[in-house]
Image (cartoon, rainbow, N blue to C red; front, side):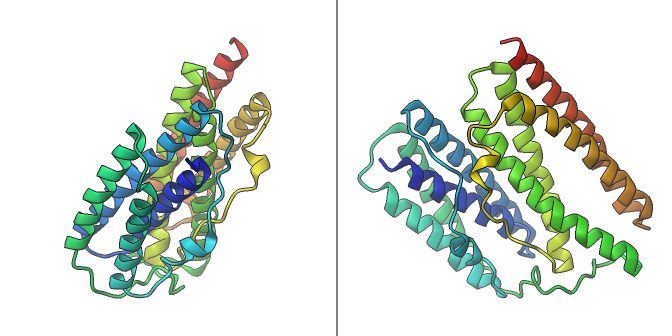
Amino acid sequence: MDYQKLIRFEHESFIKFIYASVMVKDNEARHKLNDIALFKYRHMVWAMSDAVNNGVKFNMDFDEKEIAKIKVTREEDLLEVLIDDLDNNLAFYEGIDNPTINRLRSDDSFFLRELRELDLEGEITAFNEKKELPGIELDESSKSALVFFLMEETFKEYELITIYSYLKVHSNIAVANSVFTDLAYDSIYHLKRFANLASKMGVLTLPRPIPHEKYEDIGIIEFLKENIEEEMDAEKQCLILAEKIGNENLKEFLLFISRQEVYHGELLQRALNAIKNS
């Protein structure tokens, strides 16, 4: 089986669905797309684990043209892209009989049924660059700072999801494995929250593939040390923006995120200690 292709397909599905979930207006559809995104993330990790167990090397590349298909202006067009995505996955699974593929086939068949029951019609404003947050008045300085923050952080969180997932499936140390799992899921949450704000402001940006050297054959000890420092820096950036944002709800959200960044540093330290002691 072509594990690289399977991983790429599941990876692309995850990206499409997690971003689509913040692009549509209907709450039921948003929840459904988010649910599918979380399963597609799990599908990706299962495919990665199977590749590792079978001694197959792989990368985390994806086709940017494939992801760009969701950059549309109508919800019905987005729905068509998502349906095509699952159809293509199901076509790839044909003729393959193993526990993972059988699970993926079952899940995607059900998700496809759910998608076809959705009635999405409306304008997508996620990419219109209006730079206005509905219901919230911000001065130009705060607005510019928030837009810059969201564009930076959405990509950073996507990058962390990818790296932590790759490290997780290559780790044989239970504590480190648990840490990478927790950090990946926190980054998924952060990505969704940041992308949702970016979508509301019309400044949503889609991810780009990560250079292989950021996750392949890296010095894990040095990586963890650097990321502990980066988490502390991320906390500071959230605090700085929280103080200047000029809106109480956004301030509290940023403070909430900053406190999570502090705990991420603690989790990374636990992983570092476990690896050093292994």
